[in-house]
Image (cartoon, rainbow, N blue to C red; front, side, top):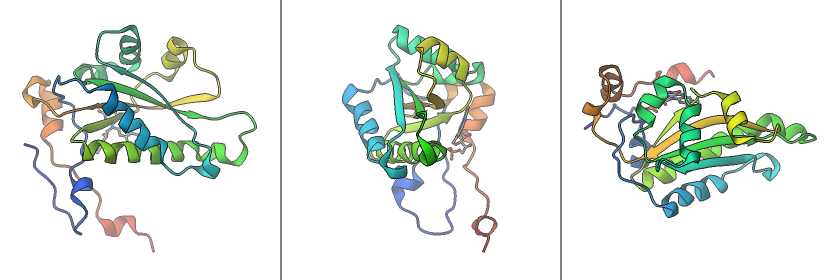
Length: 188
Ligand SMILES: Cc1cc2nc3c(=O)[nH]c(=O)nc-3n(C[C@H](O)[C@H](O)[C@H](O)COP(=O)(O)O)c2cc1C
C-alpha cells in the first residue's frame, strides 16, 4: 500500500486518494466505465463554452487502435503503460478563426481531465498523465486534422502489483507524493 503524505489542511478524501500509478492490474474496464469518465470531462467549464476537448481511446485488447496509441508513447512510458487496461489521448481543438478562446484551449482541456480524474477516483480508478509521446506520430498514425493538437496521453485502470515493475519504476511507485509548501505558492 502506498504511504500517504501529510496534508496541512483537511482536503476531501477524494482529492487525497489520487496519485499516478505505473503498476496497473490487468482487470479490463467496461465501455460504460470509460464513457462515464469522458462524460465527466464533457461537463467541464471552457472558454465561451467552446468545449475544445477531443479524445482517442482504446482498451488494451491488441487492436490496431490500441497498438497505434501505445506506439506513440516514448519507450520509458511504454514500459509500464502497456499494462494499463485503457489508453486515452486527449487533444485540443484549435480551429482557424477560433480567436481569443484558442489560447485557453489547453487550459480548458486540463479542466476536463481534472473532471475525468475526480470521476475516476470516485470509481476507484487511477489516471496517469503522460506528456512523453510523439505528437508527430499521433498526427501521422491517426491522420488527424491540423487544427487538433495532441496534448496528453492518459493511462486509466486499477492499481496493480508494483513488484512487476522495473527497479527504477518500483522506486518511483512507492515514493510518497511530495509538494512545495503552500507558502511558496501563494505569492501575495
Ligand atoms: C502534463 C503532465 C505530464 C506528465 N508526463 C509524464 C510522463 O510522460 N511520464 C510519467 O511517468 N509521468 C508523467 N506525469 C506524471 C507526473 O510525473 C506526476 O503527476 C507527478 O510526479 C506528481 O505525482 P502524483 O500525480 O502521483 O501526485 C505527467 C504529469 C502531467 C500533469
